[in-house]
Image 1: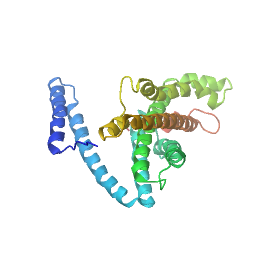
Image 2 (image 1 turned 30 degrees about the vertical axis):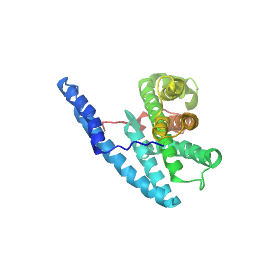
Image 3 (image 1 turned 135 degrees about the vertical axis):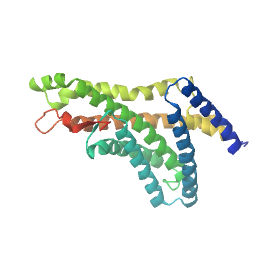
Image 4 (image 1 turned 180 degrees about the horizontal axis):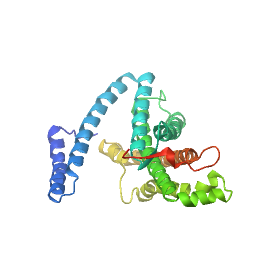
Length: 267
């Protein structure tokens, strides 16, 4: 197995491309240079810290610490979902809807995969559990973010239509249903596009990483198919649950639309 190691010099050479992009964006007055450089710095710091954390986890394989890391990842993902909303739910609901949906979808599918498909010994082996959960959370987070943002935006824009449906005797589920369906379609577009183009247009990260690490392409392909199916299921179920919880929160017990439960991201 021929694994080529990368050192600080190689990574510094790669960073020149990002710096060049920031310089060009400054010359063109795009206003992206600062964001690019901050994001690049965060990438280096965050991934370096994650490397140390994973090294320690792999050495101990302690379920307690693996659980702590998993719930820290979930909390950060829940915060990202909340702050990606143009109009998010106020109070604990802004954090709770996305976080609960990710927990029920991502953790359940990850647990199912580890217990019955990959079956490492022990089942929580960090070499498998943490990377798989990370991919699940990342993709489910994006799907839930898109779905909630679309639904709350449509509810705000189509307030009159929804209230007219309620006056006609429709329940809150029926009144919001067309906009919830539109939100679900929006949330699933990136995942469906990724599945349709995988192998023909792009080689996904996990497959590429395994190949670069020296694993046979056939093995990498099998793992990638598994991950794509898991990601799709997690994103779909997570978005369904999040939009349902969000839609329910938009109405009170008397089936009245309560847009006062939303707040602008600028607030």
